Image 1 (cartoon, rainbow, N blue to C red):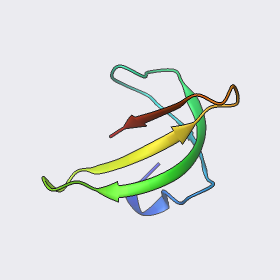
Image 2: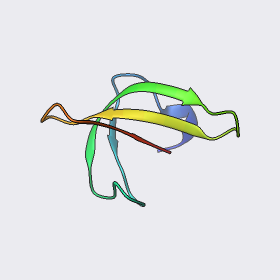
Image 3: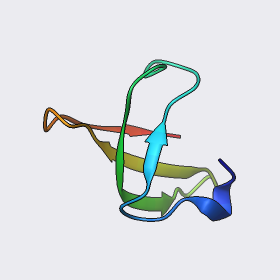
Image 4: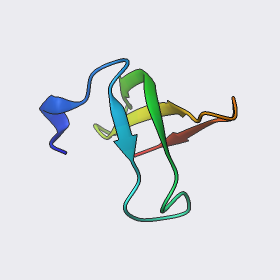
Amino acid sequence: MKENELNNGGFCKVIGGTHKGKFGYIQDKNISKTGHVTITVLQDNGIRFKTL
């Protein structure tokens, strides 16, 4: 998935890092002060996590 394809409500599967293998729906897309795109992902079980 490319950065410009990230939209609220879209499905996301994390492919690397701490949350690798987790998936859910994008709730919040943000650009950090350092210029990185961060997203908050809501899993089916109600747990949210933030990832790059």
